[in-house]
Length: 311
View 1 (spheres, rainbow, N blue to C red):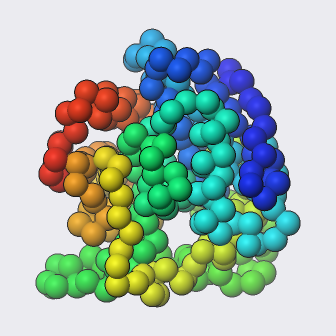
View 2 (tube, helix red, strand yellow; view 1 turned 90 degrees about the vertical axis):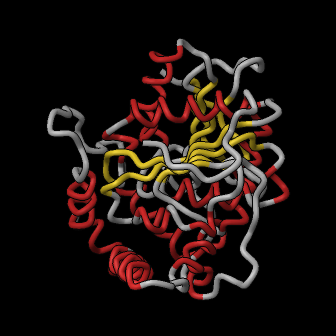
């Protein structure tokens, strides 16, 4: 059961914010940002497990990204630019009335969070960040241009193939036809089963609407392929401790891309975990445990100062 309210973004778009707990300023606040084509319900399992495991030790909040779930749709595609998405995260933090939040992002939510933790306008409001299946778009562009060994070249080739769907999403009209015919919906359902335990009784993401699929295409069209084709010589930096949870069977955002050293700041760690791209649905207990543990570690001032891999 969530408590919902509306936050007005800087461009006037109403955003639906959902608190899974009461907001106690004495507790750490985890703010979760979903990806494509999800809405805030992708975090239901993680929120439930955090509550069971830690007995309301954290405030847990998620919001529907503009155009998804119960949030409104901007008037034009420009309303989906990353600068605006970062401003949305800032507006939600302001509305919560807490000093800082611990970001948790998946897929496009993680891309938005990477943009936020490297943006001076909101970086200081973010205490830590847990990234799942997403990276900064500029880092992705740099990764695709950095083959130094035959193994690295193979990793980059695999990511190129895994990202081929992006070019389809950028085509005018074709993805919309596929979505309305439910062909693309079935593809996503099949991908979501990758990495899911055989014993899992969880169903697919029935909470998604056709509008979630359609509106979310603008995330790609407003922000790609520019940063990937021309990432820039100077990559964005952050002082926020980052934890990267790398699903071993993520075939959309490869483990090699997520481990790319250009995107991992000092004071951070990389943890390989079982699961596929939608590990937040298939293994919510693992995501909850590692997110809570990272928050505790950062608060205690015990975040590792070097990159680290934890089994």
